Amino acid sequence: MKEMDRLVHIMETLRAPGGCPWDAKQDHKSLLPSLIEETYELAEAIDKTDPEAMEEELGDVLLQVVFHSIIAKEEGDFTISGVIRRLADKLVYRHPHVFGDAQVKDSSEVTVNWDRLKNGEKGKKERRSIADGIPASLPALLYALKLQTRAQRAGFDWSEPSQVIEKIREETDELEAALSSGDPEAAADEIGDLVFSAVNLARKTGVDPEAAVRRVNRRFAERFAAIEDAARRRGISPAEMSMEEKERIWQKAK
Image (cartoon, rainbow, N blue to C red; front, side, top):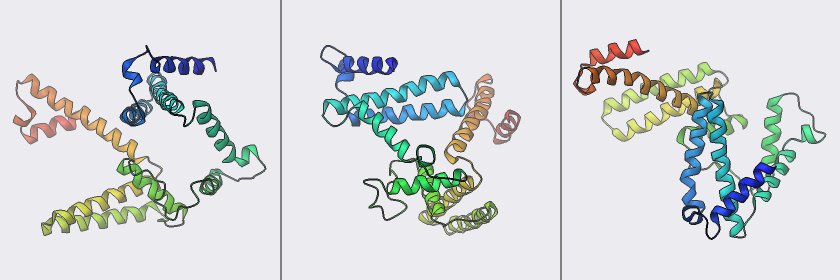
């Protein structure tokens, strides 16, 4: 597309002598925080169902793809054309029910075929564990979700969400016991088990745990802002308000 060619040309110009000093000195590692930040900003735009923001943030993510590809081209590793070609080839290979003769009954069979084909690709045959290939840098909730999803595909899973809820009750009891014992390490372990089980329940009920926590974070910030506004009107800090008053404002904000 002309737009893509123009974007690549602009970034190459920025990296070239006489271009932008900041862009010219970047490398893969220096850009990594920006890639992560732009991805989360896109996630926020999607959560808010804001098409205009999505368009902008998708552009920022695309910029990162182009930026890394141009750096790789300069270093003789690969090009943006190679990135696009590899992606296109991968999509065709992993969708034999669309581009080949394979037959599938539903989306679950598509997932099974996808995993089988993915595991047979170069560099993935050596995997011996469900944890192999999951990026260690993933946020903890997403990492847990990945582990649980792979375990489920291997046949290791609860059959009903109610069983996970019972597990959560069990973990809560164990956490209470750990807290009563005064052992901080045991308490930390039990809190981890409780959060892991909550992620499992989210998966079983079709909820994205990362998105769910982002939403509750946003709701908490919005409701606490009502407490801050009330304190500001009185010329005091929220810490100077009684818990009863803060709870009353909180409930009203809900």
